Image (cartoon, rainbow, N blue to C red; front, side, top):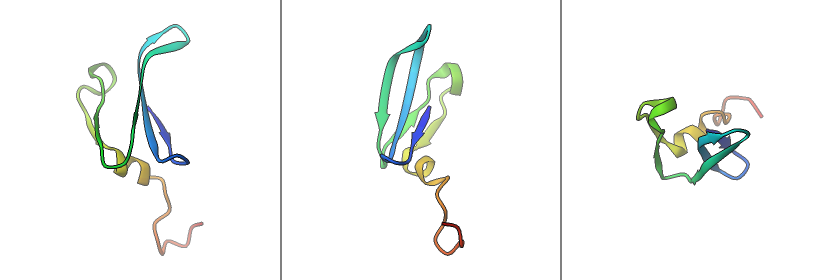
Length: 63
């Protein structure tokens, strides 16, 4: 999984084959994504929450 905060997207890459991945899905805020069973055992993530998790909160004094 790659968190792309610059473009406000979450990339989920699966089915590794050597140095590449056979599947690459892009998810946007408002979507939910279920991680494949191999790394996540059916974990469901809210894309908007994941993208916002590393952003400074308003009034936190961080820039």
